[in-house]
Length: 403
Image (cartoon, rainbow, N blue to C red; front, top):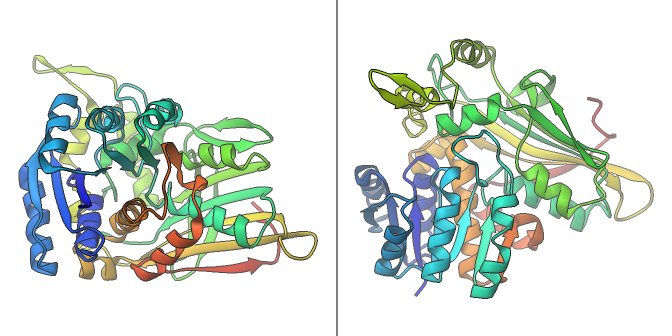
């Protein structure tokens, strides 16, 4: 039997579990665990109400490898879906190796004590998974994940090679809060405050965080200011498409978000360096995350849409010369909430986590070792996006981006 164990009980996990329950023919046996069992129970109750499917829940510290191994064996999992924090990736991978099960995540490893996320730590596990006859699929979210699949679909069906690539992530939703993050606050703020990096002419070019931006008109959202950032799929895209001359990642932020974040940075609240407070050591960013609104609570109040996609320029697959294509998805916060009780940022990550899991369970994607999304056939994944709430469209542009 195909038995899945999902680790983590945030908004992304909630969406993923709901969508798995809606596809019981692929996921007949679903289990959910996190550090706080009561959060798992809330998700399980919602799933039962919405779909009639029962989910078993457990309490687990994902960084305790022996406990994870025991839980994996207890539930008889054949796949572990890691939707916990990125700095828990490696211990969960260790547990999967010891228990002899496949692995999937949505974000690459990031050390607790350093705001630096890259694939080298997980790529180093390739031989271990290969020798064990197991598959680990990395980054099956939206970005990374769908944006990588979008890119490889364009390369398979529209472009022989890709010369320039821009990933554009816009959340046009309004949650009504003075300041809140749309996914885990700790990870969100670590990403946003890290120096920006992009790939150009065979090397990484670094610029100060949030210093480079451009206006962009996003369909069904409007013109928003997009900021140059680093995101992990740039690393894998550059590796698996070595002909790329320039690859960049852009994300939109409103003026209020930038204002609040600047103040928090200036007073030290975004720091990951320990400080002493009332006789104990705390991490300012972790304390800040504990008092900010939880992303999974924003669904009911968030209105508007997300628009995420890639623009690629390269040698045309058919004909001659260069062409530029824009492929994207637009997702409604209200529709996402109506279906799963979560806002669209969680939805756009949770649905691809379900689809990646389905690719592995059905044997559509298979292999022994550690793999990124770029290494897989994009077509079946793209088909499931259309079927399960994230329809996409592609259009040819007049030419490369001007920014």
